[in-house]
Length: 90
Image (cartoon, rainbow, N blue to C red; front, side, top):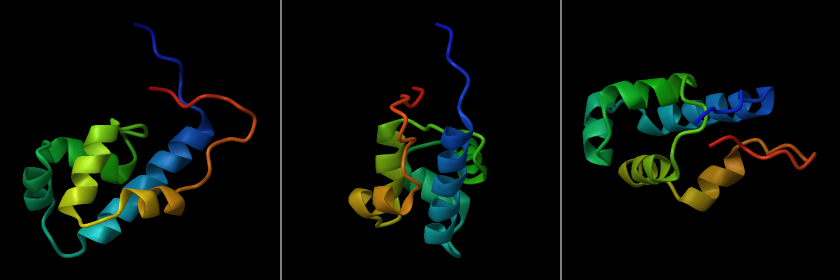
């Protein structure tokens, strides 16, 4: 399957998501959060730095649970998707 290149808006949202998750992690180690969420440390690090701009919903949900973040509030803190009707990759 060939994936469409990400738009700049998608990359911006991915970076914003990573910053929010990193801030929510606070002093906790990335390894402990990744283990609690059931994901690899490498995946968490990539999400936090924006290298994975469009992580799977269940990955974000697992991280939100591990960090005691409400998914609705998390989505409100992210930049809005483009208003031009273009779809997010995934």
